[in-house]
Amino acid sequence: MKFLLLLSALGFCRAQYAPNTKPGRTSIVHLFEWRWADIALECERYLGPKGFGGVQVGMAHGVHRGVGGALEQKVSSVSAKLRNCISYALQRVLSLHPNENVIINNPSRPWWERYQPISYKLCTRSGNEDEFRDMVTRCNNVGVHIYVDAVINHMCGNGVSPGTSSTCGSFFNPGSRDFPSVPFSAWDFNDGKCRSPSGDIENYNDAYQVRDCRLVGLLDLALEKDYVRSKVAEYLNHLIDIGVAGFRIDASKHMWPGDMKAILDKLHHLNTTWFPEGSKAFIYQEVIDLGGEPIKSSDYFDNGRVTEFKYGAKLGTVLRKWHGEKMAYLRNWGEGWGFMPSDRALVFVDNHDNQRGHGAGGASILTFWDPRLYKMGVAFMLAHPYGFTRVMSSFRWPRYFVNGKDINDWIGPPNTNGVIKEVTINPDTTCGNDWVCEHRWRQIRNMVMFRNVVDGELFTNWWDNGSNQVAFGRGNKGFIIFNNDDWPLSSYLQTGLPAGTYCDVISGDKIGDKCTGIKIYVSADGKAHFSISNNAEDPFIAIHVESKL
Ligand code: AAO
Image (tube, rainbow, N blue to C red):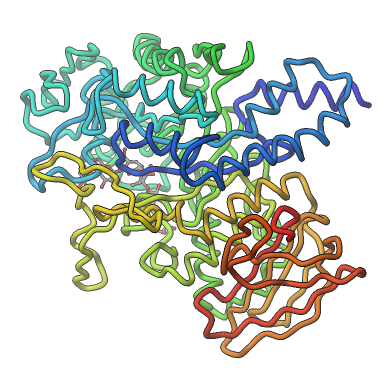
């Protein structure tokens, strides 16, 4: 039995699903549109094991000793390899995309130009290959891994003018399907295979169109061809050799799962400077499956994890109390809501698309624009055991709604004449230059720590008032309680925690032996009294064993 457990743990760590839901669960942060130089600094000063914002650094180490230690005891006969594997899975990661893309000037440098590749050279507005390598090295060295957003389904749009308006200056001609810097040419695209009248995807109910035709006009690569697969694999292997830990595979719905598998089978093991020998890249595939289309998330499970888009759409609906939804219904959140198996899911409250009306999810999606509900949503996600979590970190843009649609949804990152602005850090640790840095908000940063502390613990002690006041624990390690009703909450509840005084990590921080926020007194029977005004700035409270005073 022990042997079987060990084998399956090893299998998981070696497989593309790691970091998996058991001992290794932690969070990814998407630093959307950041420059490589700023990410390297952020790894060192905030996300990594030393530097500013030691909270997250302390967390990662705390978890490693606590949970990793317990696990190591359980599998005491485990080789050093497995221990390395576990410790790898406990580290924090982030995602970004580094290859050459088209420069769009009309509109002026939209964020989405990055999703139109020109070549696999590593130079974009975020930096060149040297800067990319420097970032990967510096982040890995402080225990923060890099996950690349890989755009491999297509090249640039069909209608883009030919020329050298690209981030490394490479020539390309979309009309003749010519991308000499790869090189790709006409027979490397799916034009002959697509059966829609326009050559674009016109009908999401036709799985062949979705895979063989152009997504919003983007030139669709013929991934059934070994040459094309090899070029893509070469690109991904270049990144793996530099030291990245895995990939978000963009537009996975638009590729045949078997073609993707053929590419993934060509991938190198991760760089042994930072990863245990034989480690495989972590894979999470972007498939939007809200139900009602022939292509299902489950079609992609063999390749790796899949984005669970129902998660943010439903959570937003519940917290906004739309369609009669209430938090009390979250009791069976997860598979009970028709979501994919937890160990296949990559979850998030919002992403770079649906925070501005692209992709799917609609108006229910919570974002930093609704900070109060957003913090509750992210906290719920980070406290709940379902899925592998990704935190969004955005930039602010001037939203302008016309007939319910934001016509500024294209606006790119903070910039001066197209050059991306530095992420500056204010004295209060928030970010300047219109970088939102949700990951630095105390409530979110402290819930990332909460998730690390309760990693592997069961979902316990659920309580609700039949409406929008709910609470739950994670074993005897953590407890969280929300009041999203229009009246005060005052309840005496079983927390499952050891007796003591705890610091609420939402209203404050534990600093030394002091708490800058609300204090919660847990008695010997594990019970504690909570009161939360419906007008509180943040109407929720979270405590965990490492916030004990
Ligand atoms: C830009 C211009 C286009 C131009 C094109 C080419 O905006 O006008 O034609 O260049 O020149 C991003 C931007 C695009 C941008 C593109 C390239 O979002 O605006 O196009 O870069 O620069 C589908 C895909 C999904 C994709 C999503 C945006 O399945 O993979 O569209 N996301 C990724 C990236 C995204 C990126 C790309 C892919 C391309 O995250 O940033 O695009 O690399 C249904 C389908 C979904 C489909 C949506 C949207 O969703 O199910 O699969 O996503 O439609 O078309 C309800 C339904 C739900 C439905 C939804 C919306 O919620 O339940 O299923 O309605 O109809």
